Image 1: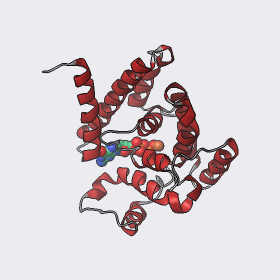
Image 2: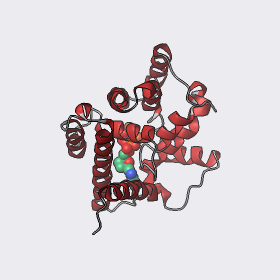
Image 3: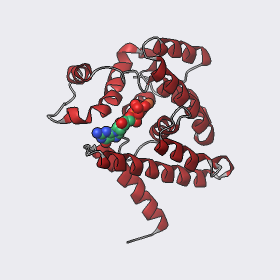
Image 4: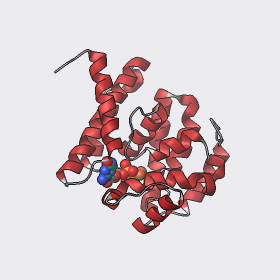
Length: 219
Ligand code: DGI
Ligand code: FE
Ligand code: FE
């Protein structure tokens, strides 16, 4: 598998053409908006990784519109476990299936960083990499989202003017933004009686622990 591959403007344009032809206009509007937000976040945190983040953004929801039996078939064919009851968390399948399909469908993008950012964009996971965090957040706060939690989180992140912060302050602000996002997602899942993935809970707990350890607080 390629590692740390970088993608030029022409390659990204070709990738955009390829993915747009395979998704609904609504999903592509979101995908393009995630790419834009990934550029803005990359500019703040890791300018050299912007091309990689853009590729991950373009690929993150390529299987979102597949039906549940197709998602399950892709998982099983890749040798991934699908446990009884997993179908109740079917909204988390597409991140796994997109990551599975990238190496065969888009071999030029079979890059570890791209694949892990796509793989964890829905639930997050314990000890997320910076790239995983940035795609996860770009997906949550892209400008096309009008859901109240998304509008609130977008405001929380940008209204504090992270561009004026030091890198250390920025990373703390990113962590607080992510905690807020996981809290909102978990609250929504709880209120609708949904199953919460252990990865979602672990992602949130790791960030909260990092915050508490940094502040030296105990309750
Ligand atoms: O694919 P998108 O709509 O752009 O966004 P996404 O990949 O973040 O998916 C969001 C959906 O995934 C939303 O309906 C909540 C759901 N989700 C996120 N974490 C969990 C979850 N669903 C379950 N059941 N459990 C989770 O832990
Ligand atoms: Fe998604
Ligand atoms: Fe998405």
